[in-house]
Image (cartoon, rainbow, N blue to C red):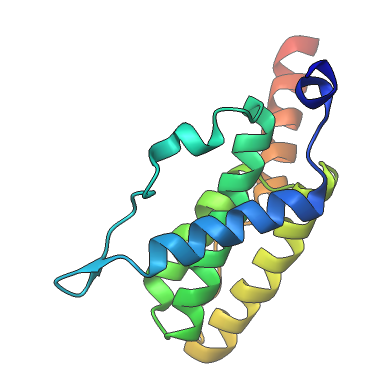
Length: 139
């Protein structure tokens, strides 16, 4: 039992869990609207660590964004991509890097389809804040 508790999920297992959530959620529609509830509640995920739940949710958000891009619902897709951008990173965990690069690709597709540029990259904002705080604290 202790081995199970100490064991971390692999990237593949996290993606599979997110895909299962996505399939379950996207098939539950009421009056044409997708209802975001899990049939077993979130108790199905109680064995996950906080980091694993965050990564499962991150991939889940990416899958929703990809579906919205495929349906040409670009405004909604952009909102989900922005949410992913808050967590995804090109220097984070394997899941965060995967989501980061797929978000970039989806955002590029939205830009190509609509001609509207995507949001400012998160790393640019972070580096601006770093520069600002570094400059303030050096005084």
